[in-house]
Length: 216
Image (cartoon, rainbow, N blue to C red; front, top):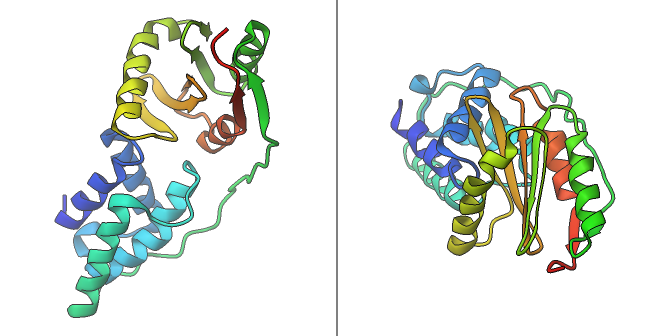
């Protein structure tokens, strides 16, 4: 793997797990139709600002590169300005079906059992979802087979991410599919989905929820 590609993938781990970050990179490279071995700093700048950012925006609610990715991009821009060199140009990407979904913000009183049950039942009906977990200070709601087995692991992931810094979303892939975890008030809500599930749709749905209440 080229050094620049490795740096960009490492920066992407701020958004997703290492495996998911590499998958995002591979999809962006494939859709752009470029060879990372032939790309210099200028080409990488165009790639990050174009195809890679477009790929990220299908999964995460961002407008510009942030954090480590922004620092890597700044270094590439400085290198390109200092030593201009011919480089492969990424092919323009088709806009594709971004399926922009606008959902109203919806509040759920997590202190009420019926509200918690309604939330997990609603998520369980989403296409491609194979498991739903809502875990709070003194309650746990799970739907669909197998998600109970992941509950302890997802609880640990949530706790670690909250201790390091507040997070908006954790996304990872595994052999059977993919998982999304986000904080919701004092709770965590997690979706286990099939590999072919529409991540953009699931992300929009998760982000439409707001919590009120909490401890019953």
